[in-house]
Length: 228
Image 1 (cartoon, rainbow, N blue to C red):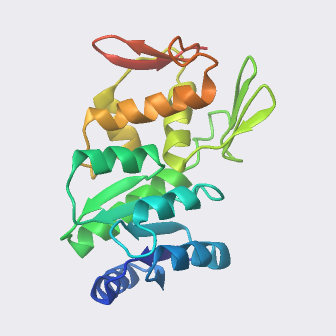
Image 2 (image 1 turned 90 degrees about the vertical axis):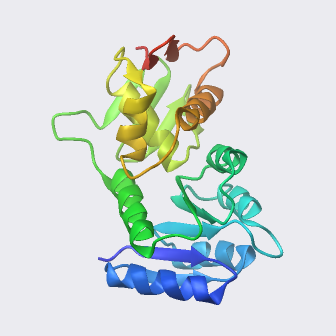
Image 3 (image 1 turned 90 degrees about the horizontal axis):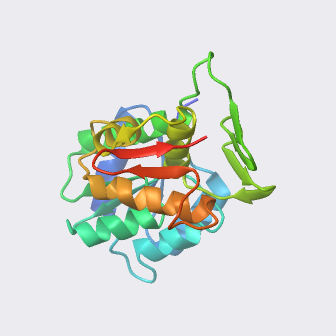
């Protein structure tokens, strides 16, 4: 079954370009011209991924993403005409999975959509466990669920993938470049600050004292590791 993509932009021309390029790649496409409309469409149509413009009337893309994350972990790729690092950091902190600056190549957007869907949809290999347990922390891949002391922890798809990668290789040190390559893949033109933001968010969600983490340790000058 073809993946369903929700495109959100107040510019009908952008929506038309996205629809054409995504349908050509075999995706089903639904559209919304405002943030409020997008939230309704997500609840009604249950798309597999959202392409979300930042600059929109009524509520902008950031506010739309914030409201979306209150009830859904659906993957989101932000579209914006502003190539500002602060926008990227804010977007990732709020749960975005990728970032595309306008003007964009429709082919590149389609590739980014495929890459994000692949990361979200990939199952662990058959020789790996589908569930990991560390003291009170339980990570279940099939259910995309994380519990700590029986309290379920909500995470974005990218946060979960990052946690699963590190937790399934306990005590292995990952450089920031390796994490960018494995989680954001080579199509993502990010920097190591992206990794820093996601590690900080994971610590805030998992650790009793994020400043003295039990699970996710910094290996100074190298990267990070998950301690069992």
